[in-house]
Image 1 (tube, one colour):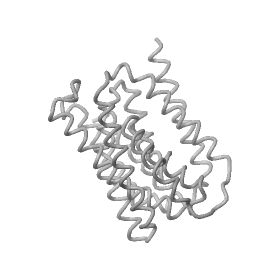
Image 2 (cartoon, helix red, strand yellow; image 1 turned 120 degrees about the horizontal axis):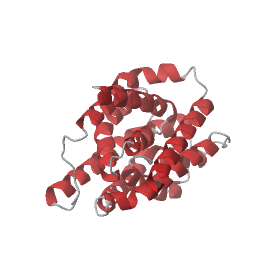
Image 3 (cartoon, one colour; image 1 turned 90 degrees about the vertical axis):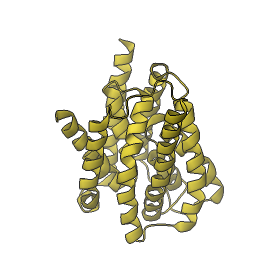
Image 4 (tube, rainbow, N blue to C red; image 1 turned 60 degrees about the vertical axis):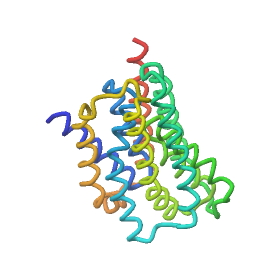
Length: 256
């Protein structure tokens, strides 16, 4: 029960941040799972299973509140889906212990990127169409590899290109459901076909996944109200520091 409660609070915190910033649910959840010694592929599969529920709830809210740029959505999804499927294939092809240092470095880099992002303002302008395919493909690929990254890469990339925050966050969050679905199906396919040679028992991380799901679903309807009272820059800095600390701790454990 203690493990379930821990991941319930992790899921709630991650969803609170994600609701405010349009990013970091996967990065926070994956970083915590990895810090508990769970192999990268198992961590990513667990996070994406949880995201099927949390992104569905978040996306529905954005659709109801008309926060979606459907033209941008249609450009994002195909490239994000391709990148996610490719990332899942690569992750299930390598030894989990061998890739752990690279995942720790990647998540640490995301933390530094978010910290820098919180300290600068970007002028708003229409998102150039040519920047969408590479950002979406990279976001989907690294999201599958690291268990998180769609939001930090795609949301930050589109905001950095001048996109309007309301529509960028709403569109990216809604598209994330289809990316998470693709990654989850890719892991399932790798498991069924035997491609995922060090695949875990399907129920091994059930408590962690259940906690992440329930925590995220409980907070999802409240996140929009709560985060209006917290300056986004402060919240983003706190999350960035948390990710950096957890990644540094994981790197230290790997070096011991």
